[in-house]
Image (cartoon, rainbow, N blue to C red; front, side):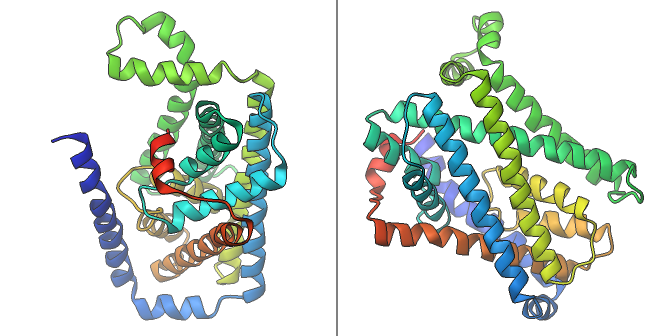
Amino acid sequence: MKLKSWRRLLTPLRFIVSGALLAYLVWQADPATILDTWRNASPLLLVLAFLMQVSGQLVSAFKWQGLLRAAGQPYPYLWLAGVYFVGQFAGNFLPTTVGGDAVRIVQVGRRGGSYASAGATVFMERLTGFLALSLIAAIALLIASSGWLGAQLVTTPWIIAVTGLFSMAAIVAVVASFNAPRILILFGFWLPSRARAPLEKVAATLSNFAPGAIARAVGLSLVFHSFWIGSHLVCGLALSIDAPSLIYALMVPITDIVGLIPIFVNNVGARDLVFTLYLGQVGIPAATAIALAFVAFTIRLCVSSIGGLVMLLGGIDVRTSEIRQNSL
């Protein structure tokens, strides 16, 4: 079957998988109990969680600005922040063929004249963020499963094994990306063209950035993920969930890593499953865990809607044909 045919099938398949998994989890947890938990949420804490997610997006826009400067493309921060929110809006509300990263590439490429350079900065922003995410997950798993800080929070052996596998695979993938030039020198001749071509693109991208710029990007990624994890913790407090803070530092990154598997839509289903499994080990009912997943996702959609306001008021144009043509 041709690649285009697979892509046409992938979109409905993703909706089916996410929808079926979510429906099963909700049915097992009792929808009425989930709704009651949702209704009792603290509005003030939900506002705080919203502001924390907004702050995280602003940090990410600042990180992107630094990478663009390192690539010789200085742009005003406020404009880049607006583009960043528009990208979030596109990724959550527009058709699945229109990705948020593609929107950012097109906006910067259209203004600066180089879509390739814009794509390189977006790739590096994602790569450094993924490294920070993987490190947080690995460290949190080590602490949560060892009991160093008191009680052992993650006790189910297969969950420990799967979590460790995902974390290590993510770290290995990032390390391999950063070592793409060396891999090409040592093994490029033996690699098939399908494996060599992406490595060549990664190597070319890495050559555009100094080590200091990459280190700063990783540091800002850690700040972003602190806001992201913290907003979930505040959502848990809003729902009166009595769970250790460390469990959020584990399940939130794992949710994002699992959500990269291209069978989910916006982490729907994956988020609910991970929250149910991890919170269940500290005595939190499945209905409460799913309510937390719903609240966190709702706040994410509210934050993403800021991009819609930017488009409406700021006039940033999102033309899907140009986005598809110039995306990575």
